[in-house]
Image (cartoon, rainbow, N blue to C red; front, side, top):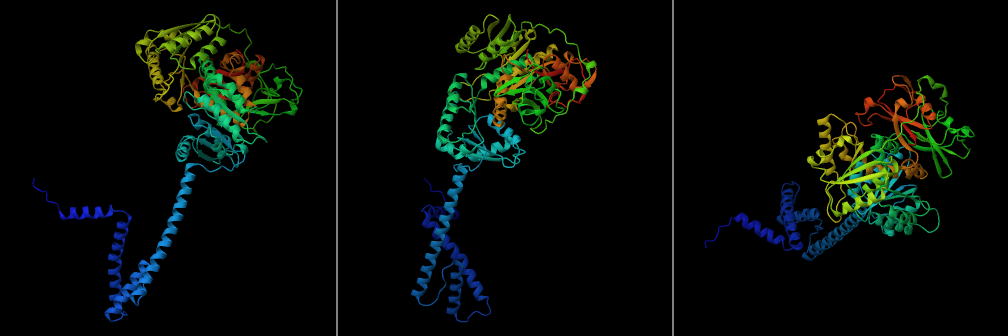
Length: 633
């Protein structure tokens, strides 16, 4: 075989690469040769071009050596060979010492910076908020805590999760928005380790939030985290209030025991099911809930008003021009929408909806009421049996069926369309067995993402349509959980356009970013389950007494937020102030807190919902408008 001719340049490059592969000694040698190849000729040029340079050649060579030594820090001493050798030796020792010292300092700084980037240093804060865990809710919680601390001088939020610290900071800064005055502190490590939990200084925190992740063992890990938190806190002294969430109600008792007497445990799936059913019976109600729960608008506060002591509760409804009174807190028990004649005691706290804790100022608005514009109180329309179409099945579906059973009239029916296997059939059968005789359930096998499945159903004959996504399969990587839901919504929207009739659709989405993608009709409503739970936890973290208020507000059998036709309160076509609506609602035993304008129902971001408008605000009320009240069905 003929040998291939190799170019000289390739051979030289190969030889050079081979010498470098021998290790650090070869690299040092090449650097020394390179420095000498540059420094010695340059020093010689300087000496030979110097008019004051000595004439003898030996003296000039000595001067070249002197310049080279100064440049390379080799001493540059001249004389006997022994003197020159010792000078070079001392210079090399000094160079080695300085290089080693610089290397040690650089290594120490690098290790310290690496440790800081790992997030393993202790947080030294007082009254800060500690957030334990990582899920989609963390972005909502952090952004709401930032909004709540906007008027505080030293607000801080410490997030601990088993994630990279730098990655957490980047994604939180991106998704949570501007932090303002709030300091965001991220620490990395397992949240079930008491030693790692101590990094967040929970003993000096104002409140601790425990977020569940999206894995099947999320509730068990929440309980374990609460136990680790209890171990990390000192046995004596005050403990910070704890707010946590579990998905399955069977873990609530264990979580309450682990959290201690001051803990608040939410059942996220139960709360989501309640909100879905409420929105299904009155589309648009989720917008009201979101407005009440976020810190961007008006929210719940507890205030004292000594001047109202001894007066009936009905007087308080017209006593605040820029706030809406919805009840009283008597001890630890909330009294939402009590009878108007209920006396207010000196120890009662008023539950109000207002912009901030200092915007509820008293001024009697009774003189602004226009009784001539108030509608007559007539007999309420008796409720009739309802037909509900449930498209899809997940772990919250049995809870939704249970909430429907508690609210609907006897003779109501739920039709379930799902393509699951035996597990789904068994769950539907169990839900049917627990639904009682007042609610009839029927399972239809089919894929809700196929047009032929929906065409076989007379979807327009149902009072409400609920679309649920599938739960991710355990142990398998899940794609976007809203993908199938968006496909179903697209098919329902096509049916709306084909028939020209609106469908009362309520959809559960997991990712809030998909709301902008959802093809929703005018009568549709969306429940972002994780976001609402995050908003609820953030509200309770600022005032734990609000937990009982929200429990009553979102319960199936208690007093809750309702939307009624505006014609039940004021005459259609009349222009009147909102205080007249409040007075009309008081006559009906309700607390009016806002309205939804039909003309703006398709315009974001509020979609016509206005919560806590000024009492003196005037507008012309139409037949399609709705009034938001706190009352009973």
